[in-house]
Image 1 (tube, rainbow, N blue to C red):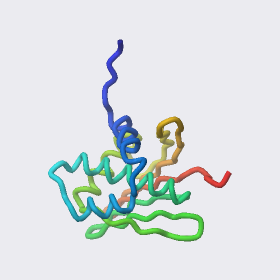
Image 2: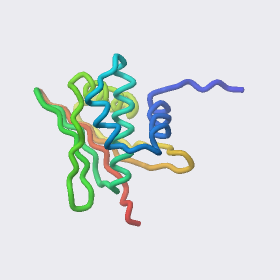
Image 3: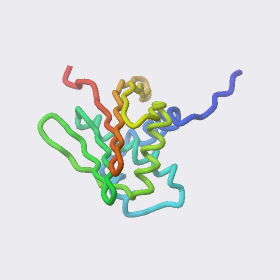
Length: 147
């Protein structure tokens, strides 16, 4: 039997499956107020919870924006924007690094499809990255969930 290596993509899918039946907003708020020693694990948890929250809201876009001294995470749903609790700078840095590693987007600007397997289904996202001197952003665009 072939042994599967655990890569970042698989780890993100596992984390999404793990938190699929939870209250995503509550979990995000709780993890912001309680910092653990494992930044990588927290980054996977935050990223998976944010993606799941966006899916639940039938979002068009999930944006992670990091400035010199600030971080903004927003879900753009049909006619509203939802702000998620902002992670620390080290956590957002790790979230960005994980996303770039999964998508292999190493340039300052790029886009790439990302398919996430979620239990017996999957969702195809479009990931866009953009970086300049003082800002960096990652956007996850979701398929139209109305159809």
